[in-house]
Length: 347
Image 1 (cartoon, rainbow, N blue to C red):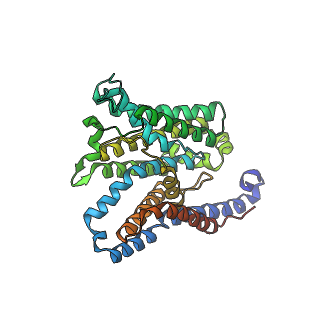
Image 2 (tube, helix red, strand yellow):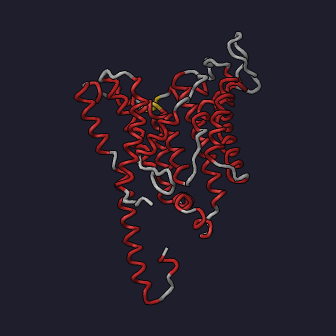
Image 3 (cartoon, rainbow, N blue to C red):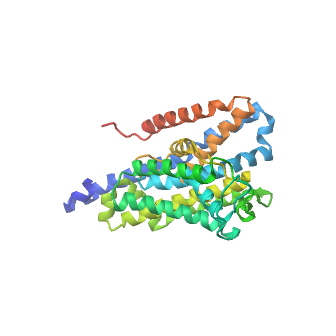
């Protein structure tokens, strides 16, 4: 702040030097955070190999990657939203309700097991699912940015409401016999690797490139760091935040398509409880809950770390009932490490 308020000519150089040093230290710390989980991943790989030689097989590693795809898209969405200084809890419900609404509109009733409308051709299922995600994000943006409602409460209410809509439309049961267009991406393989892995890799690359090199991408950090200062600098804060909220819900809806296609059905509880894993992966990946800090690569390493922990535990014969406890413990440890590694002073 002193660099902007001090206007004395002779002191300009002395003020700019510490500011430049601070910026360089912040950049170095940001890079450290991005890479901080890489040694952890390597250690987990070594432990996995010791626990079971099957860990390093291609089938197991590809399986871990594919199981990470849907979660990673939610983490990507959450990372972008947190960087811009906002929070969206409704992503957990969007991954389930968007596919349910889409198949409800295109599938006819089937022997009393599912009451669909069958109003539209089956090929429209994917566009309808994505459109649902866009509408959910737009509605959240309207309530938060135009009506100035608390974002946490709005998205918490959205999570509950959308979950109830999902259960009501699906009648509390899984919807099977999905349209082929809806299951293709979840089941297809390209060059021997599941298509979902390729798609997620491309989306993360695009997200990371946008944050690093595009003006609007870099604006997310400015808004998350200080929205009023960003607004003063000419950044259209509300418009960019709204776009990020819509993009986050769109990614969640697309994750729902991949998940439904992978398992060949849409469950009434699809996505339930995922928000805990999403925040665990995002936080340990170095994305700040206070906004303005973090990276897409760091978030991706958070996803891989969680999935590798679960995989190693499974190979070691540890009951899956411990997974939720472990995710919570990882969040707490990550917050403690972040608190002391950042060098921030407690006020």
